[in-house]
Length: 326
Length: 279
Picture 1: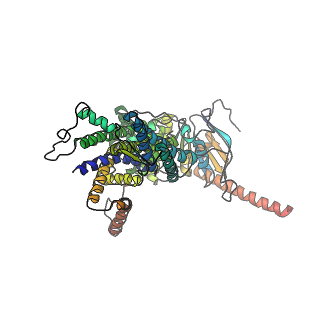
Picture 2: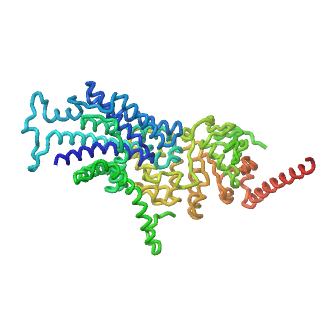
């Protein structure tokens, strides 16, 4: 059962990644794969700072900033130098691989017993371990006969609270004057330029914000798992995309608030399904293959269904099926 | 025959030149030294055939591209090197394609709220506060299209005519120094086009706006505005103002077009003759 809490926690951390993916892929229609690198960069900076004894809050903020800087570069390459969006992301992602190795000095950094954001959360709830030592009695919680570790629950609660707060802030932001202009940039750039918005700057700001969330996601992952690894970003964009797609399937994409909540629900569900199929005996090596096939299916299926429906209704068109355009 | 000017022109285009795809087989000399002055409160109709440079002139003023040579002044400001989004502080625009002027996946209210800040910095205040909503509702009601009850509907669900009417409202929400209309009824059915034209006339006369409208409808050109220019091969070849413009009928315009065409043929045959004689 502890695996279940683990899956929820992983899902919440993935939700931040999905939030970033949502901003670039859905709001800007910008296929940004910088995330594979900025996720690691955020995590690496956090790990190195925490090992060096810096305050974990500072280290987390540094992870967010590192992600933003990565996204800023991608946006800059695309907007100011006119490089294709996908290539911009690949360039920055590739460069980040070296930067991440340089940052960590090796391919893997373990944080040992250093305090992280999550140890802060533990202390806030359970008190300082030096004063109230952990025992078998106070280390577990009794939930209707099920006894999960208190630590795990606190981690989940802390990460969920952070993700919920950031989602609320994102929702608020995309309803401000600046945020609506950003959404309009993705929806109709010609129109919003004619209304006086510098769309290039909006895209740069958007990719920076998106990768900030992704860097933060990496930072949290590192603090939760206790180590940073230069390979940990591999396949993350596909997972994030899968989460967004699952979310849209769950709640639709009619309103902004719903899609944001959907992205979180999608991430959690995605991680739950992953842990389920793994526990059912699927070899972990096949995980990325299955994820890719899943995203492929999700991308192709809607168009396929529409085609199929149209094929069926072509002989007898249903009234009101066509969108009303005078 | 230039009238004495005691006003400062709202729009001044001087010797504007633009060549697309220069030094290639696809080279197009779209503007070949266009000169144009438009006084404040004037409504100018730009006529011309395909490829005459009428839309290019409008796009040059809007800043869709920079002119190769010449200058553009709006309200006394030299905007020749201003980007499109910078010029937006002076210009309101309605496009030919109803899909171009609005963001389809955002609500009517959000679209209008975006336009309410045209040319102004956008901060972190809510885009749709209560006062803004009420003002939007009131002004959208003025369009008489029943859209005021559908403010939260996505623009993508509206018809082309409704979208053009909204775009017109958005372009003039903040009073523009110059209103640019690029064949904004060409994609609409005749009845809807009439409605939008009527609305256009109303908006321009009520706001005393300076406007430039590109069209290929002779009827519109005759009925609207107080000046007509005709373009041909990147040049302004005719200019009718004042009483002369008011006397013009559709047949007169057709005659003018025929004239221009004949002159062109004459030029060609004349040059052929010269070539045969001297080379």
